[in-house]
Image 1: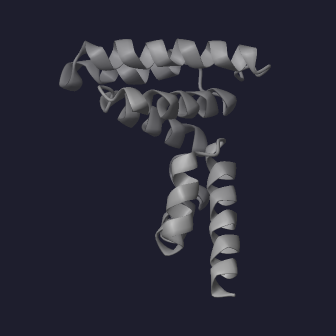
Image 2 (image 1 turned 120 degrees about the vertical axis):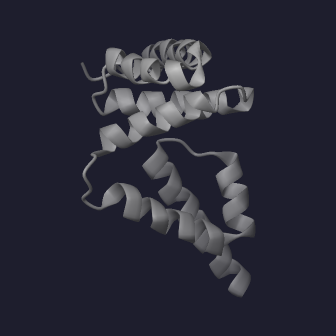
Length: 138
């Protein structure tokens, strides 16, 4: 019986993470199934960071994610994750020029590879959105 409750709880946690992130990640489902208490803490932390009133809105939080993931760039498996945050940022109203400008700020401390990688992922994300029938908010 306790195992069934854990499955329901882990499923709810994965659903909540997918709703907040705009995509269901298989890794999240596996982690939630094996460590639901850990994922619960992540969901609660996400609520504190992103859902409560803060100085920065959700759009800016996505921009922070984009910059952080672009700086972490030399990890090819990271690319879909970065593109997902770019898509979410575009849906929330970030302009491609705003994303590019934020990435340009990283050139001095992190090198031009951040800008090139980030803009490349952004252009791919925009094309994927078009195929998916979505448009960035201008």
